[in-house]
Image (cartoon, rainbow over all chains, first blue to last red; front, side, top):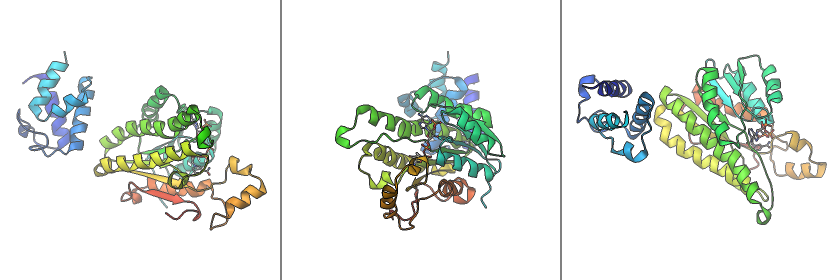
Length: 78
Length: 245
Ligand SMILES: NC(=O)c1ccc[n+]([C@@H]2O[C@H](COP(=O)([O-])OP(=O)(O)OC[C@H]3O[C@@H](n4cnc5c(N)ncnc54)[C@H](OP(=O)(O)O)[C@@H]3O)[C@@H](O)[C@H]2O)c1
């Protein structure tokens, strides 16, 4: 697991109050981890802050799972 | 009665009649208060009259960069932000047919766009801490309209609509968003009315007198309190009965 994935997992665990082992590649924030749409916005804002990147709205919408977030951030953080 | 100890509040237009009273009452209830406005000397005078903890945070609300810097500086000065009072407001009255673009733009910029930008930044802070109070000072005119105030009425109605939309978005995070709509409040401006003008205004107010800034501030203290946690998306009309809506 990359360092980015660890940092993303930490944010998700803290924000959504879920067990770290639930945060798998395919875990959907809304369907599997109990997020509502506002949580999703907050997660994106937390990612932006943690990685000092800007995530445009259309990219944010495509980030549905933990894996989506990690792969987006791995590309964005160079 | 309402305890705001430990709460941090930012009041725009704290150098004006109503904003000063709101800042004083919030401080009396125990809040740390950030005082914003453009006239620093007046803000200092207001701060001197408050025994609690105050911070002077100058800001020109018609300048976007200056607006965007205000919430971060308030958070830094006070260590956080629990209460935002968007109180600053201006009028540029003119009969609608003669209204200049600048008269429209200036009023919308200060009364509405600045409130949008400040609320947007504040909501982020408040969502994270799962607590917040945003209070907009609108006007009875935003609900009833008033000849000569097309721009002002639009800005004040806009503030009400915006507050209701934000209120729905953030209610689940313990952030409430409300407005207070004052009627005629005694101020430097109303002091200048002649007797005839005064009488004709008073004839429209069932209580038969102008309101005071403290009566608006009392509403703000309530909306800022924990006790008001079930009040959101509302407009509190404080107008002596001049409009019952
Ligand atoms: N008085 C009434 O009868 C009445 C009735 C209904 C609604 N209201 C509303 O209540 C609010 C307060 O009114 P008030 O009677 O206390 O008015 P006021 O005494 O004229 O105060 C207006 C405040 O707004 C600030 N302000 C204006 N333009 C600004 C700018 N570009 N940047 C930063 N601050 C600016 C002023 O700060 P500086 O002077 O330091 O620039 C001042 O502190 C307003 O929103 C008004 O529309 C008042």
